[in-house]
Length: 174
Ligand code: S3P
Image 1: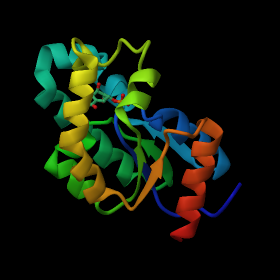
Image 2: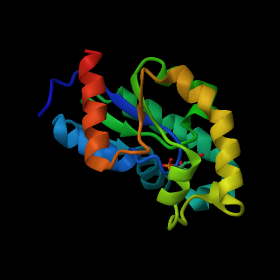
Image 3: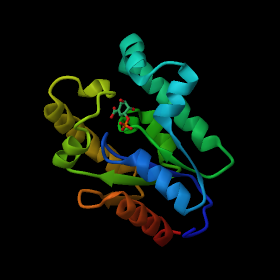
Image 4: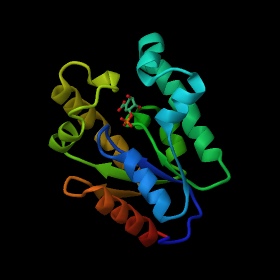
């Protein structure tokens, strides 16, 4: 364990930035619980993210995402929470994030494309992957910056180094 954990820690950033794996690693390092909001949404909806997008559209998914974030943040046990990449597009979710410790895992498009090479489960990436990622990153960058309490640049970091950097950032801000 690398430090005492008293608050929820939310990992934000684009698809492919490594939030889920890092959340699990940081939780292990800090003896915390962890969750992934996409998994929580799928569990409570009984449908995959892709099925939710197909049936209810992105707006329907964002409603479920906001509810899942509120529920995770309401937990009495401090958790590392891996948020979906689009959590910041919903104003109500940004308001919830402003009350939390939020680490932005920042990555370039080249890194995201490489890490998402074999990913087929993100409905927003159907089609021109590089083009979509570029426009999403451009639109979301200011929103990530708005809610982040710290930033970790992950381009040159493997999983272990990412986990260590997040833990160091959190400990420095305690
Ligand atoms: C999304 C990111 C995904 C998932 C959904 C939408 C986005 O989560 O929530 O496909 O809008 O960026 P990850 O960031 O964990 O891939």
